[in-house]
Length: 153
Image 1 (tube, rainbow, N blue to C red):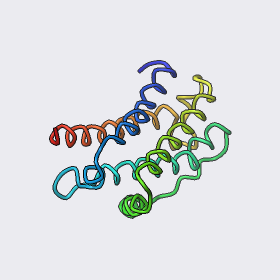
Image 2: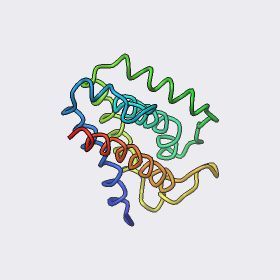
Image 3: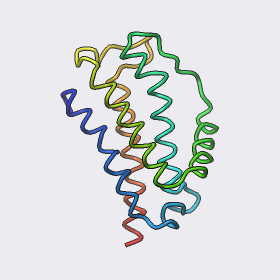
Image 4: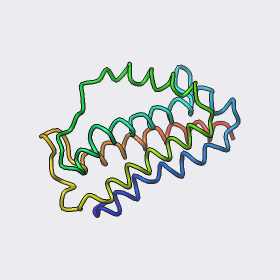
C-alpha cells in the first residue's frame, strides 16, 4: 500500500466484508466468536462507532484543516457502549450503518490531497497513521470473524 488510492482501497475492504455478514444466521450473528469473546454483531457495532468517532473528531477536522477534537476515552467503556448499541439495532440496520460510516470516511479522505496524508495534525496523527492503525484493526477483527465462520462450516 504505497499510493493514496491503494490505501483507500484496502481501507474499503471492510465494506464488502461487513455486507457478507448478512449470510450469517441470527444465532451466528449474535453468538460469541469464541469463549468470552464478542459476537460478529458486537464487532461490527464496535468498528462502526469507532469509524463515526474518528470521522467527527479526526478525519473531518484533518480534511478541513481544523484542530482535532479527539479526547482521552475510556476504551473499555466505549466498547461496552458499542456492544450495547448493537443490541438495539437489527442486523440490516447495523450493517447499513457500518457501511455508511466507512463510506463517509473514505469519501472525506478521498478529498484530502495525497500530499497531506503524511502531515501530522496537532502532533497527534496523520491520515497515513490513521489508515495504517485502522487497517490493522480491521484485519484483526475480520480475521477473528473469518476463523469463527470457518469453524461453523
